[in-house]
Image 1 (cartoon, rainbow, N blue to C red):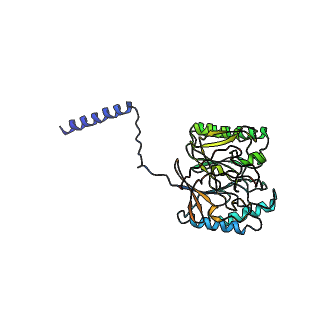
Image 2: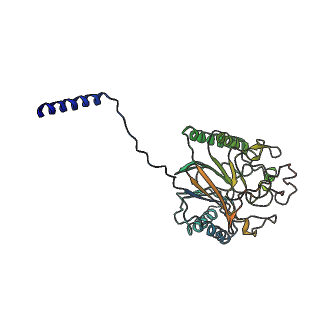
Image 3: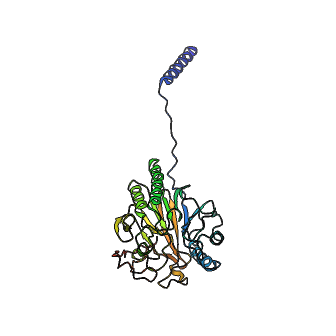
Length: 354
């Protein structure tokens, strides 16, 4: 009786084994609880330039970072949009001295920031030395950066063919990001702005920006989270219709872009990306065009990236500063060319920080 029961048990087990062998394979995924990604903190600024030994600029940066570090004890990367030297143009020693002074000022507060995790853009005063990052795409953990250097996107406008080539290369890189489903922030960092300003009318700055703008706007409409960040216009007048010392135009806002090649005609366009200045750290002149402007207008920016979300804050030596100031009229270099004379609108909305 016991023997027969054992046989039946063995037979049953064999049948079960045969049935299992013919069943389709199943895998079971063990899903961890939803976790919020670790935030990534990026520091940004520009126009460190100062005549002399950079003592004042170093002190400006130290004062701003003293405020930033009250909230942010660490930084994962940095973006600087050019002009490390004020006295000369394309002097290797002067550019190197400015970059060294800037990096030393930053590292006193954030010692982990170095040339590997810091992007340095060439400005119109800078020599293209080995510490300046190459024009083109640079990928980091949690964000991507495309550099537009002065040599390739210069003040004075450059050549039509040169800017078209630059825009085509940018388009290829952005299309690759779209193709791979990239959903993290994409920073386009440039010394020169895109907007039509009195500086465009006088010098030709950004007269071919339309080619770059169209590429960015198209990529933004196709899902990329793009932040365009610039420096250069740190004096009363050139960009004051957009805010002056603090510019921040989010997606959906308007901007004036030169008709390609023109220093007279412009079109008001709707942004499919965020457009802003990084913050000036050397000086901002309130109409006097000297380097003694008050430090309350000198700022730096912090980006807090959590997955696909970006929080933007601007800081001065006094603490949080508006992302955008009120637009107002102004002339370029004390000339008769003003925002009003050019018919530019006034973007008077003030955006608070963050």
